[in-house]
Image (tube, rainbow, N blue to C red; front, top):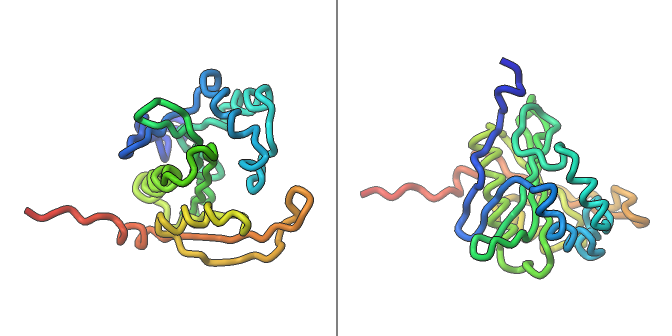
Length: 201
């Protein structure tokens, strides 16, 4: 059986949390909502993307690799939309990157519309990614890399249980200036220790 026929990670969609649904990105129906935040300079300030036109967003997400919903081999990234259960509004998208099979490592990423910042939605969605990585994909270690100038993103990674491991001072020439990278990580056993224990009757 080929790897295409037997994905290493193939979640059942939608994935549901208390307030959110994580589902595949619709390359037609979701473009307006995604453009609403991917066109903003403040959203793109600390991520590789630059503010995009609607046509650019549509072109990017016409590529199936940009909206992959299962993983068959390392170096692939799963990307899904994050939707409010109460309204059906798309508020952001999240990514789980399978970095290495040999080292059983992965990385998380996320981007949300600023009007929804401060509500804990990113934290709620990233917890789903950690569960997928550790329980379903069998990863040993998951990281998150952020720009030091983005403390709100650091707060998300801290809330999901990651520890700050490194500060790489001015390690990258990023959008016309030197950027300092801060690296966070969590191991499988650390993640499992944080999970609620089932109640004993």
